[in-house]
Image (spheres, rainbow, N blue to C red):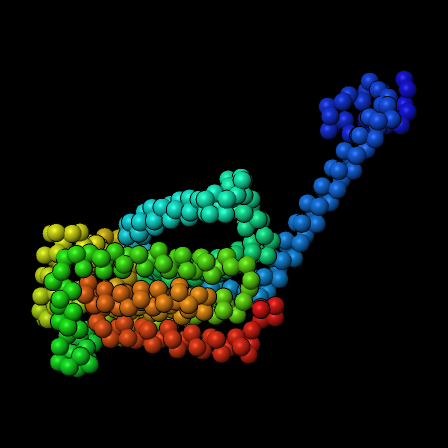
Length: 400
């Protein structure tokens, strides 16, 4: 049997072309060159994949170092939530979480489809791309195939998801650790601050309109989508900037200090539960107006308030928490606006308008005293400024 160079090459690359080396076939010069080119191509491809893998691991390690403060904050929140959860035996109300999850899934599916179609038609009709579908798929590939973006995204999302998981436990434990004791004081302070009238009375022209209440309720529920979209957008930003870290740090600190410690210190349920707590009928006209509007347009706030109350009283297992002071809806909306204004003036103006709508909705829908919203807004601005100052002096190395 002949064992020339062609046979040796044939044996080495038999796995590529299903060639049986036992036959000892000798290749011609052109065939030998072709197989050598294939072998070199395979070797180069393997080396490229190895280099890309190593580069990604290096980028991931560097990103982990830059995110170490965010990771530490998330771990601290998880440890606190674990201790609180063990002490209170509180678990989230998965029925409420499931309902919100369904809303979010539908909303993101719709938004994703709208974004994809918008991008495609932009390429096809405005940019006049000859192959819009190919260009769209290529842009997606380059977006998700960016090692730096992926490394930042994984670290940002990991710390954010861990932190949000902890918040779910902490918020549900507030009323257990610190029973509601501040509702009367907050309601009285509201009247003093608003010239002897409750804030919802100044907004009675809104409260009397079922359509206005319906629109406010839509915006109030849309807040959950805005929250996830804003955090997600900050996490997947390619450039790891001080602004990005300022937002994510502020997000965690506002929830920790405002959504847990301050909420425990001034534990309150809110106007919608004022009468249920046996504190009087001050907010009965507001709740009656909401019930009347609900007969014309579904006011989702009422059913959600009932579900939360059932969790609080033990009628259903678990709770995601009742807490009025400070208003985290307003606090987060203001934080979104502060972040958006630094990214785009137009986006910032829209988010400030959204924050104003959330503030009005928090009062008109019976969720909060106006003072809750003022405190939430002040807290967000103060923490945002403090985080900005901290990062200007002590930002981790590598942050732009």
